[in-house]
Length: 171
Image 1 (cartoon, helix red, strand yellow):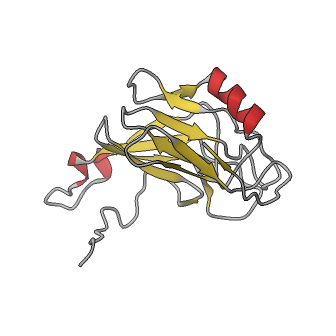
Image 2: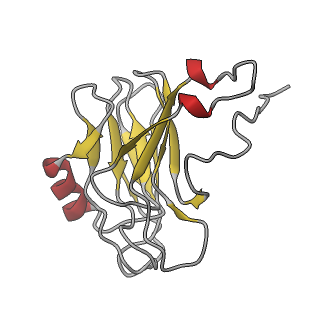
Image 3: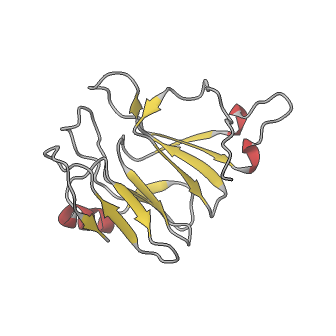
């Protein structure tokens, strides 16, 4: 017993192949979201700024197998790669840390982005950005998880601005 995976897109003409992107389920808007990342080529490539989303209802292929038309594009306020995302039970979405450029020594995407008032778009949250920068500092390649049944997020690991691996935990 277990879960079964089903491919919904073998490939798509909509976006380039990528690495270091984040995908998550937005429960309040019943949609799948894929944010940014970098081209899956060589280092020195600038991260993407795009956000792709599709309603989970629209992800079931039609008779022709077409699910490409279900996806819509928007943009983050800045380019970002190796960031982390958490979705709270009330539907608030936070995007934390990341890189604004490659190679990995170029940190600078530490602005915290959040959905505003239930909106699908993400905008910079100045207060949370300042707190993140003061407490956590520059961070990329980290992971964030939400404690079950709570609104408490845990941030762990990743690398700092000096590209040194971290073994710390924040909540």
